Length: 306
Image 1 (tube, rainbow, N blue to C red):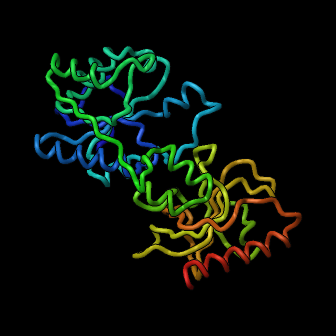
Image 2: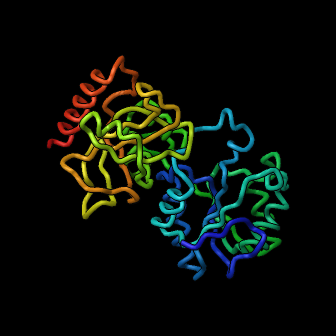
Image 3: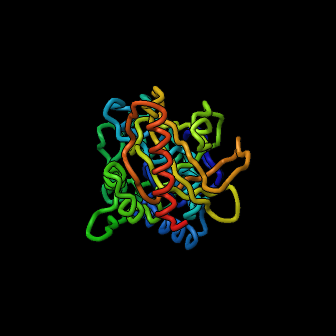
């Protein structure tokens, strides 16, 4: 995927465009991008997504912003897998937030992206004060020479698919429901880094991934499947949280892979959370923690029928 940062320089050629925050890249986003790819193929134009960094709610109210489901890298990779070949990432800062709806259309959509066809979600609003809507885009399209269509919401078992619905499922530990809304298990990607070796001391060596987004959408102990280390996903057990027993303060993902003994420091892996075993908790001492880790590993093995 070709990625442009900001909108000050125009992209090389006209585009078919989808706009959104795309946090989590759930089934609703997938339907939007698949429609984008089809329209781009019909018009022989580049299928492009426009997204924002940070999430607008992180800019306006960082203390109450929702937990991120995906990093920017994860989001762009997932959008690329769905068929988008180009992305414009607009820094959401004070100057961008101050753009009126008309300025957003002229500066970003027309001059920056040379949009010829635009696809948006049915609840998309834009511009200062969220003044822009579908009707304004349609009127602007007649003036500037682009067409607009709105995608209807996607539902699963009667529930509207949204990033908020995914967050609710994750927060309650319902990994199966989250997977239905996402169209896949919830995934965290990252590079394996050196840790404090507590897992090794407890007899359960772990691959550690530092989590860039905080707060977390969920915490606890999970049965996981890890991709990126071979031809097929490897089963394991993972703790996602701050590790209160050892005085942790920053989020960390620790993954213990079953029957695996390779040096993988520096490897980029994808961790699929397939089943929640329990909440994260503080233990009175290392012996109690070690006993619980052994029980967690046994429960995850039983889940995978190993």
